Length: 254
Image (cartoon, rainbow, N blue to C red; front, side, top):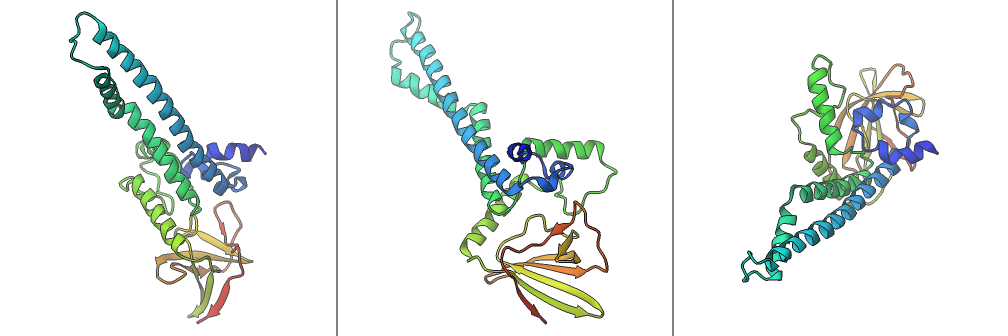
């Protein structure tokens, strides 16, 4: 129960921090990411409304006090004071900061529906700065996002995948098995992207282990293509991806 309660808060962490948790596999990340993104956007909206009510009311009150004072020009109206307070509120850095977290929360919520868990940008930036300062000699983990890539671009790519998946009907995965020069390959074609399937991750399907060699984008009802190479043996572990399709896949050979 505690893991379910902590899930939305843990979903705020960057991917590398989440994977370092000893109970990473026990957390329902899909549901946690949905709740986390929704809570962030709703909380930002509530804070924005409070900030608007407090700031504009305070600034209008001060402006009217100045208008009513003897030293103020009598040509200033209360509507002009209110408009000036609104402009100051709209251009205030705190307003933009709160609005950023509101938009980020909606983006994280949309990403969660594609089974993609995105942490909040400040912690993501902190993780990248820490890695650059203290982990210069350490190799980047497989599939790691380079610092030069924009965090915003990952949001845009996720939203594009969501739009693409929304246009497609939900169909079972297609599995193609092929033997080439004594090696066995498996190609999985899916109607939506699979979370954290980045080469060269190891994937377990039933009692067999595969190494993810390539990810490609095609066309048709199953545009997401994953090509895997059969391993002679595999060892279960926290970093191994488990392929368990929701529906019985369509199996073919070529």
